Image 1: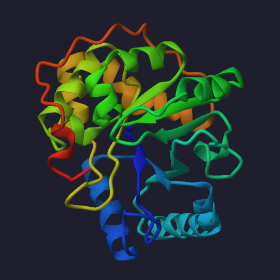
Image 2 (image 1 turned 45 degrees about the vertical axis):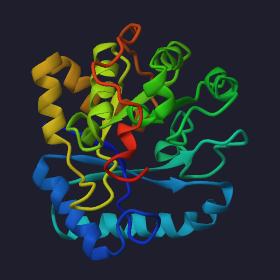
Image 3 (image 1 turned 90 degrees about the horizontal axis):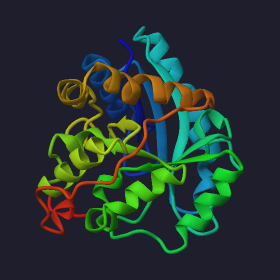
Image 4 (image 1 turned 180 degrees about the vertical axis):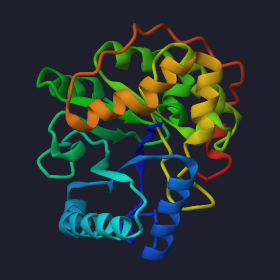
Length: 263
């Protein structure tokens, strides 16, 4: 069974993810033992200045593939970045889009809300047939307070990636409830671990996979964990189900998403 993890911070010493090769390889083994088969590496790019480390990322990416091949684990790796949204965001680097395919890119908002004029910027990409994939919208306070914004994004061509840990309750009850509401409304298209280490934010997918199988069926789980990410890696068109308006989450306490990890 193929399981893609579309969002990880696996390379050592790049951002707030793995600090060294020992932890990186522990994460690799953790993912392998959990059943993950394909991993996209998506380190933070907070501003254009962070692209100065692109050559280091590319070199460490090749070293990772060599180390994993030597360990005979059979994992496949893909490369992109998690781009922090700003109004001048561009996609001019090898790591800007998945596998440099110029078709799909992972982008995150500030956790406190939705940036102004982001719809206009996303529209510029979409008319150029480049699809923004919004990372962990269920953790964004602007979407928690106004879930209809997630529906609007998807209607306009944006795709959404949920964190596996959100569905497990790792980020608090508000985030878990929001994740379920987005899934119910057919607004989630990918799932990623957002793995940073082996303990606090592990690189695990299996539990969320089985939760989605149990709640929505095998076909939905296969789309989110296998079919959609495989197409995104190749730059192929992804057909999504008709989105529905979001039902307000049963639990809404406002700032639950900041509770556990201090964001």
